[in-house]
Length: 563
Image (cartoon, rainbow, N blue to C red):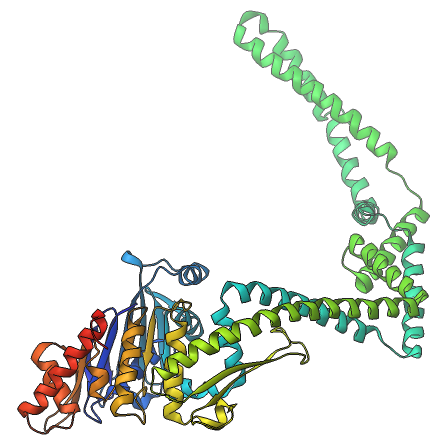
């Protein structure tokens, strides 16, 4: 649920903080006091578009903070994906700093993008203003509502349809990519034959490039190696003053006195090891120099082989393994073109088979939708009657057999008749703006048990209604408040009387500025506010009694003791 909102330096709001309650939260206030500004501030915190003109005059920047509390699995998973930890007591804090030309969004103190905030917001809050009511005019919305009502029954079948649809589209794409002109096929076949033959003729072996590069480096530097090793040999064994001779002389001198001191015996042992190592080194060096010969032809062969491999690397891949894989893929393509007609027939069969599976999954989904549509139609009609659509007829049509999509092959449309004797017509051809808002409320009331979103906001829910209809709407809102936290802006006393928590927005004007504030009212203050909504300019006893009577009837309805 939405625990609180904190707004600073936005339009008429200098700074205000509101703590909301569970159930039905009603917001009232005089025209122009800033009721819509409060909802606008919520939208800004949820990543909505920001216009610098919204900043309070003279302010460098504005600020909006929303504090939610949620344990919903979808919310927790989204936070994990963003590497964000929930606050204590499952709190989720969304903040947005608003400045000229820029704004910054944070979730629990971590900087995020507006898109990430919007994604999270979709799981936390559902805002219904005039725009959302108008969405009922789109048939795609009707399909979404029916599927949401179906819950897990629909989700499992919808997931299957999405999988089969992807397989079908992939098969169609593969067929389209391979259906080519004969001339194109012959050109590609010729190129593939050349590439496959070239790679096979090369007889490449994985790792040989590394071995050849080592040989080439050795051969290319043969003279330098021979000169360096020759000098080393001279220093160690070829002259009278070589290292081996000097070490031998040193060993003889130390040996002549080692019997006089045990410590000298250790030195003698070390020199003896050095002499043995020197002899081994000289023997190995001499052997390497004797074997260090190769013919000019061998050098040229290594060089040519390396040139070939490097040219292949430029054409087919940067390693022998990739070159060989390229050759295998080219060979497979060549096999495909050898019996290209058979290959295309196979692809066509694949398309046909995947389409058959898709249509079967669409049929199963459609059957469930048609069954659920009848059930939901009855419940929505009952809900609409409860909203003073007294002669309403309502039906959800599910027309199957359309070209399949990832959502199936159904066309779902809400059909309605609001007057006796009139035939059912598409919702968009019949309902007015005010009726759409009530229909949306009816849908939300029916869907309350299936809807996982905790907080619902209704703006302009009372557009174009009054009297008995207003009482009906207030009852539906009260019922919905039993399932969700509901925030509702209204100018109707019948709706305000149903409040579990009542907030009033007030505008205060001084010589230099105008300020809007929000506060929670109870008791006699609520009675006075309802009297004002009833149109009473004065605090007449009749208006006050009428207001008290409305509040009492609302309490009785919520307690189950009244109608």
